[in-house]
Image 1 (tube, rainbow, N blue to C red):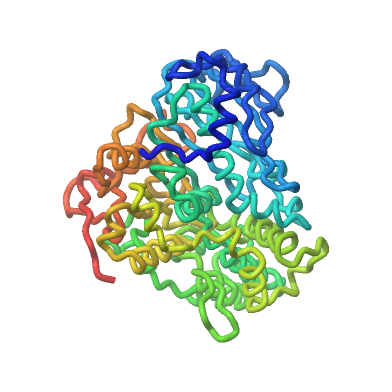
Image 2 (image 1 turned 90 degrees about the horizontal axis):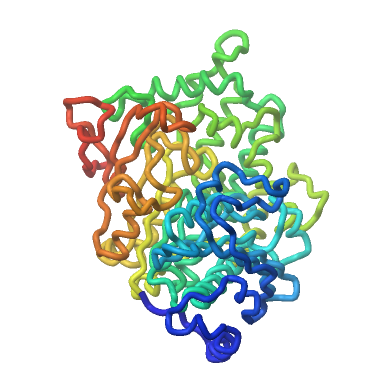
Length: 537
């Protein structure tokens, strides 16, 4: 791994701030890091946290959450970074007091960020990593902080993660007396967008990047959110209530489940499913088993995705197959009442505070053409991570793995395929194959969950894990040993929330564009009976 580039005056600052015992690879006392001087950053705490005693800042004093009781002793550094006068980026760096594996793992965020991923940091320290997390410059999970604060939007867009990364690596060097041998970033959703932003803007920050379900085309994703909200709420008769979702899901599976040769409740490639919402049109009285004409029209819009007035597609629509389940359309798209969905929350929050900058903005006035144009002009540079030119990242030896659940009801899965294809078009198949892989997960919803195999190490690395079953460890193996992954074995547990109840099925996730095909014999719940093949569409 190439050493972190540090500007000359920063070297001088570090040299003057470090205690003598940190030189030559000797570990410095944790508390001494409070005196470390870094540009535009203030360290507010440097403290050794004894094993199993960490208390979340918002928790009652001396009450350690169960998930942190197994965390070993670590050095905790808390800092505020202010790259601009309007910036206030909270950063934490955790470093194992003993047993450091020589690696750094950056933590990402979800949604509008606003919180530090303490569980992710705890898991990283348990596995021997030095790690860092950030709120990206604000402390609430809505978007009200962005109103009138364009620099905070930039901090959220890309600057916060980069500040976290560069400052963390300087502090790690100060504590251990050496830079990390390898640096990794793994996150999903907005964290997937952050991951791609790092690869595109700051190719030297990380050696390996794992980007899940990336919200990387942020502006158009949220144009799509407003398209769907309007489709289901402008006419009250268009709203599709929760009580009708089971019938919709059943109709989709009836039409398409067997297309891949198995009736297992999972669509292997939902793009092959050409379900017609009109087949659910009520023939008699309205009921939970059918859709009214306005509901059918709304459903067609959701599947089609936003188009401008000339008929050009702005963003992919949602694919059939992810409608039911706790992570399906009810929380994300339709909500438990009109306008009460998660996409409504994110779409309205974004356009109110970042695009139109009017606290009383009325979403009913939204126009797709104007909204997309203004969103791109005002925030596209700060928020979109769509640049396909990853040549600087490739040349420095970086490796990138993308993944997405086919049944994602938050971010349409084809968006990630579109980005992957844009990289291939820009860099050529051979060039792309040297450093990037995409894995699509049938039946998986947003970052996890859903009826398909949805557990494959996407949340981090266990150093003892088999890389064929752990996508994060596969990334490390690719970076450190040059072995590129061709498939990952994913697991579906009987109870997703309690793996101890046993395994329901395993299935391979194949490097795109390959898909997993049943060999024709053997247990269909066993990954060994599937092969990765390329099928013509």
